[in-house]
Length: 313
Image (tube, rainbow, N blue to C red; front, side, top):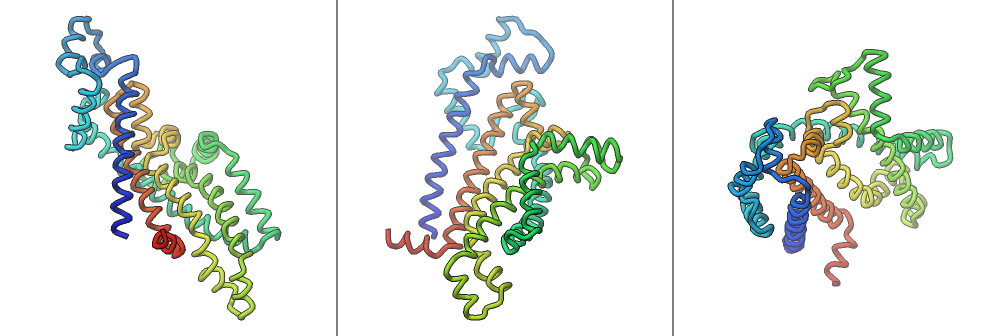
């Protein structure tokens, strides 16, 4: 296992370097540079001489590969640059926003698991019964609604008309309910369908027929045999969801004015704050790389056949 993890880490580090290189090159191709955006953020229009002098001081006239090497060296030493919008360290700005995103992601993820797994299993066990049709209809309806439209609908009904919650989210119960609901409903609907399909596939397996013929209870079959085997395809989906949530659901955070990392990067893109955008991309790359590694490890732990195939190879 240690050898496998080390091999995967080497591959993932190479991916991270590739992501940083592409990100830097894309920002270099933008119509404006850091020097120009620095003066724009201060509300001043610099002369061409002053702009050229600032570019020289910032090293923007150096070859692109030299700039990338200098930027990458700083990143490896924990310096992601200075935000032109907020005039502070990118790392400081992201550290301030990240707890809000983690809070939203954690609450949404826990609620999703608590709702989706029981409904998905129930739908599979009660296949072609009225409860199955109802769950499938609701899940299809939930998947069909775009996130932003669902969020606007919840704001209109529960905040504007009924006044139960805040229109602008705050870090309390009344402020977090609507953004969590907007994130959770589509995820629950997606997971219900995936869990139902995975459980149904396992229920049709020969080992389930054998377990039933030996008189093993249906409850033990479902939770002791079917569910662990059905988790494999769900693990990948959970990994993608974790990456999506920790990256900040930009649309949801912006819609509810939730001061997380997703809202931050939308503002950074609006004002072309390139250091902040680069820092966000690095954060996203690290998240997905680490989640990918954890998913691979979970696969090997959950499925003995994968370990056996590795030994044979």
